[in-house]
Amino acid sequence: MNEEPCYEKEYLKGNGYYDPFLDIIIGNNKFTLYADTGCNSGISISNEQAKKLDLGEKITQEPIDVKVADGHIISADIYILPIELNGLKRDVEICVIYPEIKDFKPEEIPPLLGRDFLDHFDVLFKGKDRKIQFFEPK
Amino acid sequence: MEEELLYLSHKSLRKKMREWGIIKSEYLLEELSVPALILPLSWLLVDFPSQITLEEKVKKLELTCKKFETEIDELKKHLRMKTKPSKIDIIYEKYKSELEDKYFGKIVAIDIDEEIIVSIGDDIKDAYNKAIKKSDKKKFAYKRIGYDAIYRLM
Image (cartoon, rainbow over all chains, first blue to last red; front, top):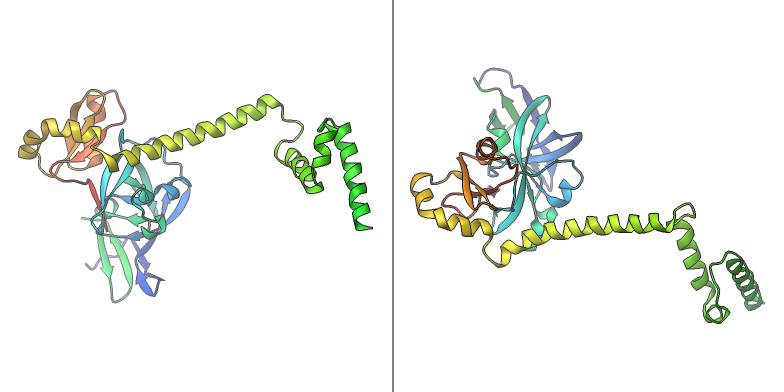
């Protein structure tokens, strides 16, 4: 990949590790999300975090099932909204999870930026340089 | 001396409260301590300023109750899935063999009220966009065909 990235961000240090955190705009609110290729929704946030946002109407008539890292299944509602990363706007599925139902504390599941957004781009995790780069796909 | 001062302030406060119509019974008053008299007064002044009528107070409380009722309903919906099969599971079971033969791994949008499969898509967005073209409704239930969960996180 020789061309210039349309966006790049250095990893942020949290809990002793450098991780790919990105500032995303949802509506008028800025959210810092963890870029996670293991999450296949667009965004995953807890219901407590979602209360701070105006997500509009959900598209789910009944809660859906979502599997978390340890194999537990928790329930969630889905919203479809445009989100923005440094001017790059895409419609994504926002998964609002109810972690407390399965005795999870909301803070144990960080807000995630997942594949439904990342797959719109060619994304390079430059581990050695501690940077994440976004390229417009050809 | 301290007791006398306390009694005087207690007495003047009682007088004022009687003038304002906050208290009527002298007997009850004798039972109450000074903080017990001050607290309800400050509560009245802070939480319910005199401009707010009783009807408005009731309306305000009704709105708060409604907000909590909605929140409780919402949480109950999520809790129900933990204890017994959901409506989605029951409807999915009817079409299971056909769906799993032809569309394994895809997302199915289900109309719970009509108990029908509305659309099938590669992801929820795709299934939703197809479903709203076929139906007047804007909300559907979803299931990933052949899997126990639609998404995985981490």
